[in-house]
Amino acid sequence: MRKRRSPQPRLVWAYCRVSTLKTEQELSLEEQVRWAEEFARQCGAVLRLFKERASAKTVVGRPQCARLLGLLEDEDQDLPQFVIATSFDRLSRDMTDTLLIARALKQSGVKLYIRDRGEIAMDSFGDQAALVGQAMGGHAENEAKSNRCRASWQRRQREGKPMSNKSPYGLQLKAERDIEEPVSGPWVRKMFEWYASGIGAHTIAKRMKAGAPPHRVITSKRGVDGEPIVRERVHVWEYNKVLKLLRQKRYRGVLIDPDLFDRAQELLRARPHWRQDRKYEYPLSGAIKCATCGRSFHGHATGATGSYRLADGSVRKYRDHKRTRYYGCIVCHYMINADRLEGWFDGTIRELEAEPGLLERWITTSRVTNTQELGREKHSLEARLRNGSFDTLRQRAWQLALNDDSVAADLPRQLKTISDEEAGCRDRLAELANILDNEKEASRSERQARTLLKDFRALYRVATYEQQRELAHTVVQALGGCRASKDGLVWTGRVHLASSTLRD
Image (cartoon, rainbow, N blue to C red; front, side):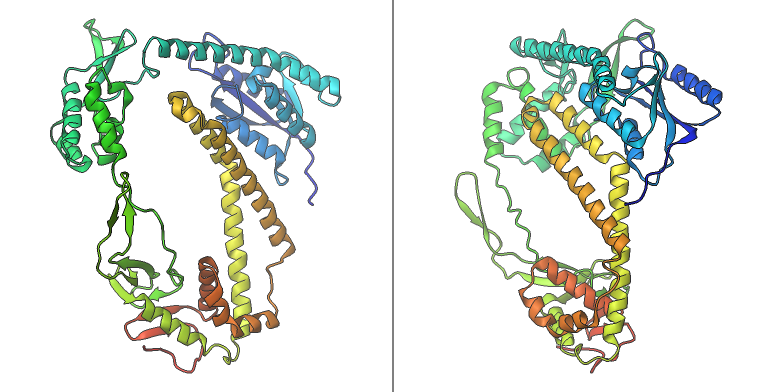
C-alpha cells in the first residue's frame, strides 16, 4: 500500500455551486469565484476551482462534487490544505452526504473552511454531530419541496391533468389541459387509422415524413407584437417514433377515440417479436486476418432455421433454406466457409507441438500482450470513475422516474444495479492494480506453455466460447499472426511449420 501524500499548504480547492439560473436567491457563481480567488491570494496558495450549476439534494447529478471527492481518495493526487466554500449548504444539503464529505476530508487530512464560520473542526463526535445539525435545515427544506411536488402531481392526476408540461406531437397545453393542435392533430388521427387498417409503422413513418407538418408549441411568452411566441419542432420520422406515439396515453379521449386507441394497443401487443437468442459460434473472429487488406475476419451466417412464437400462441417458422456459417472481411467483401476455416486452423494446431523456439516466443508475446491489455482495461476503468459516468446514469434514472410514473416504480432496482456496477468496477480496478503492481502476469513457465500446446486441441473442444476465443488469440499472437485466403492459412510470423499453408 502506497503512503498518501500529505496536504500541500500552497494548494486550495474551492467548490462553487448555484442551484438555478436566478441570482436573487443566493450568491452568484461569479461572486463565489471572486471570494475564492481573494482567499487564495491572501493565503499565497494556488487555487483550483470546482464550479457547477446543480441542486445539492444529493451528490448524484453533481459531477464536479463527485470529482472533488474522487481526487481526495486518489493516492497520487497532490492534496490541498483547504477545501473552501462560501457557505455549508453550497457543499451539501443532505445529512448522509454531509457525513460522507466529512469522512473523506478527515481521512485525507484536508481542512474545511466556510466563509461564514471559518475553519470547521471534524475530529470529535461532537464536531461531526454539529455538521449534521448544520445540514438538517437544508435537508428539511428539500423534503418539504419534494412533498409539495408530490402533492402537486397527485392533485394533477386526480383532476385528470397531464403529469408533464411537454406536449406530444398533435397536442398543446391550455389552462393545464391537453387540447388538439389544429395543424398536426389530424395527422395523429391518420396515423392511428392507418395502423388500425393494417399499415405498418415503416410505411406510416414514410408518409409522415412526406407530408406531416412540424409540431407547433405556443409558449407563454409574447413577442413585440403582443402575440404569443410559437415555436416549431421538426420530428425525425422513423418507425420507432411512430410506435412511441401510438402508445402515447395522453391521446386517448382527447385526440383519439377510446375504441380506436384501444384497438391500436391490441395490435401493438400482438406484434410478433423476433427471437433475440444470439448464437456464439465464431471463436476465430478477430484472430484471423484478411490476406488482402489485413483486417480481422468476423463471422456471420446466411439462411435461417427454427421458429418463433406469436402473441396468440401460434408458431411461425423462419425461412426453410439451409443456414450456412461464414467468416468474412466486410471491406473486401470476401467470405470463407466457417467449417473450412476452422478445419484449417485445427490442422495447423497439430504441427505446433514440435516447433523449436515457439515456447520462448509464446511466453514473451503473451506476457507483453497481457500486460498491455490489463493496462488498457485499468485506464478505461479509471477514466469511467473519474468522469462521473455512474453519477450521470443515476441522474438519468432519476429524471426518467420524475417524468414517468411507470418508470418510478423501477427506480430502486435501477439505482441498485448502477451501484453494484460501480462497486464491481472499483473491485476490478483494485484487482488490476494488484496484478500489475506484483507482476503476477509477468511470466509463464515453460512447463505451463508445453502443457497448453500439448493439450490445446482437447482444451479447445471442451472450452466455452469465450475460452475458445482466448485460446485461439493466444496461439495466433504467439505465431506472429495469421491471414486467410482461398488457398488456406498463411502464418506471418517467423515460424517454420511442416507446411506454411494448409488446404482443405
